[in-house]
Structure formats: C-alpha cells, structure tokens
Image (cartoon, rainbow, N blue to C red):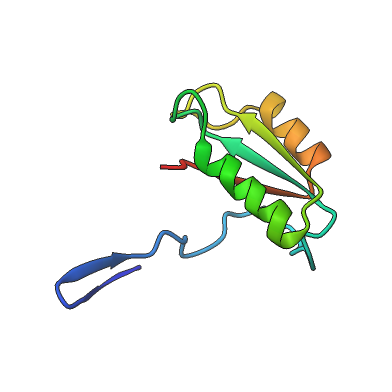
Length: 100
C-alpha cells in the first residue's frame, strides 16, 4: 500500500480490493462527440475554475461535444441520488474531485 523512496513516503490511494458488488464502467473508446459531466464537491467557492478550464480543453483537444457541471450540496458528504441521477442519465463520462 505504501513504500519509501529517498526519505519520502509514497501512498497509494487505490484499495487493495474492489468493494463487493461493485463493477467498473466500461472504458470509452473516444471522448469525441461525448458529453462529460463535472461533479464539483462544492469546496471551492463560488465555482471550480479548474473544472471549467479542463472542460474547455476537453472540447478543444478531444472533441467533447458538451460539458455539464453539477455540484454536491456539501463537500463533506457523499453525493445524493438526486445529484448523481442527472449525471448518470445525461453524461457519457464523469469527472469528480476536489479541484484544489
């Protein structure tokens, strides 16, 4: 899980095993023509400029057709079904994170 190298501790955030009952989504062959959703955790106010810039770059460089932005009500809590539902329903891919 972790190791040391030249006095630094290296942490690996991936779990040792995948949670029971979970399944990975299939990988997209391309982002061209796809809709990408950004799910902001609502920690940065008033908006996550990093996600907006990344969305612009995905459109310019990868041919993404649409970028949509969603936001969790509280960064300390998991996203509720009413937030995740539209992401799953309307997006081909999703990006989430702190954006810090």
